[in-house]
Image (cartoon, rainbow, N blue to C red; front, side, top):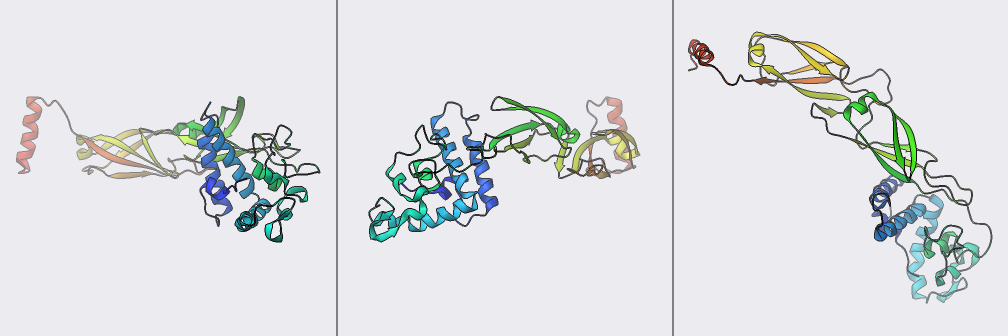
Length: 314
């Protein structure tokens, strides 16, 4: 039986932190999830490998045992891969196997009677952690169910307002409440909404990644928003008032005479809600962009020419 390099499966270094392992797992689980790759045997195989690697590396005890096995694996292979707990060279491999034996490394685990589910875990896993030929006796250990991954697409206005949303994951409709101010790429965890646990273990979690659609009006930076406001050249020269639409309603702004193109105005508290901080909002920045008159009449051209002459700019 071949050794499985779980670090290589997840694409992380052997000294990776728990957070790095979790991040790598979520990315790969999303990439190879059956919902994203229907009827793709290769993706299904990769998905199972990723889940198996996460099952080991995300568990402190399993990871310690796996790391210890990895350090001795080459010695085991060179010693002839013996059976019955004693490999060549007198090394006691029973410390790595369930039930005190080393039977699982001969294959044959993970069949239909495998309490861990042969479709989920390899013979290699079962031999070391139980659930296959490597577990000679005793009740299988409880194990947490598989985590699910999903995405929820929202408009910027949806993220501003928040509120209930419904999505379907693995054929099950779920109703969740979105907090105002949610970020693009933010992940929301729903406990016990993943796959059922095995042998009395807890259910997995559902991780929902938020995807915000681009908005033609606003650019978002944290809780601040920026928008372009077209202003006629006449109003920029002479000053005046203009109404600007914001998420919280229309706001009247004053434009000073001789306002240059690109001037920025700040509207305090008219930006985006601060996530999970009720009543707190970022700011809205207005970038004034001057618009030129088009399709001038002969009379208008003459008047503009008079102004140019007066300022010696002909």
